[in-house]
Amino acid sequence: MLLNILDQRSPQEKLSYLVEAGLVEYEPFSPSERIRRMLTLGEFFSDWCLACCFHFAQVNRIRLTINEILLALRHPTGFVREAAIAYLGVVSQRVLLELLPKLQQDSHPLVATQVQELIKKYPHKSDIDAKYEIPHPV
Image (tube, rainbow, N blue to C red):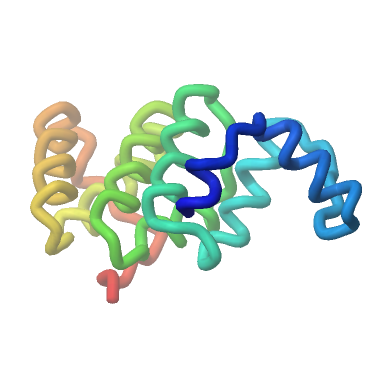
């Protein structure tokens, strides 16, 4: 980490050195492909990185699969679950409304408050039976 801070080269220049050395094989992807790839490799990224992926997908309206979303909703870290819920609130309110009853049981105060606010926002729609199973995070 300290070496990255002290290294004055641009990220593009660093990447080109890694590619030239044969340490990294660079594959160009569209932003949506890159986010989906990162989410499938989520166990190798920090919790903050995963949450940022969801926020990026939300702002750019990148469609993620239900499996990618459910995986984040099962994540042990509250702010990752919060980011996935925020993503659903913008990208797929229908799925969010189906999941709200199950999400009420979340133990993290951030997520619980977020869910309660959404239930207040959609009071007549939050009693929909969920067809997606979300077990409690580890």
